[in-house]
Length: 123
Image (cartoon, rainbow, N blue to C red; front, side, top):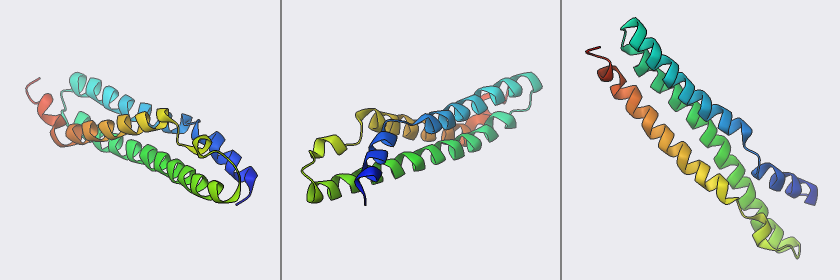
C-alpha cells in the first residue's frame, strides 16, 4: 500500500456522515410510522418500521467496521514500513462511541420489530 492511501484512510476515519444519515433514517422511519400507527389505528406500521431500522443500522455498522478494519491494517503495516507513530493510525474514539450507539439502535429496532404492534394494540 502507498503512503497516500494510508493518508486517505486516516482522513476517512474521521468522517462518517453517511453512517449518521443511515441511523437518522432508521429513527425517522420508526418515528413516522409510530405517528402513522396512531393516526390510522393500524399497529403494524410501527412494527414493520423496526425491520427497516435494523437494515439501516446494519448498513451503518458494516460501513463503520470496514473503516475500522482499514485503520487496523494501516496501523499494522505502517509500523513495519515507516517511522510513523502508531498512535496516529488509531481509530478515533468518536467512531467507537458511534459503534456502541449503532449497536444500541439495532437492539432497539429489533424490539420494535418484534413487539411494536403491542404498543398500539389498544389505541
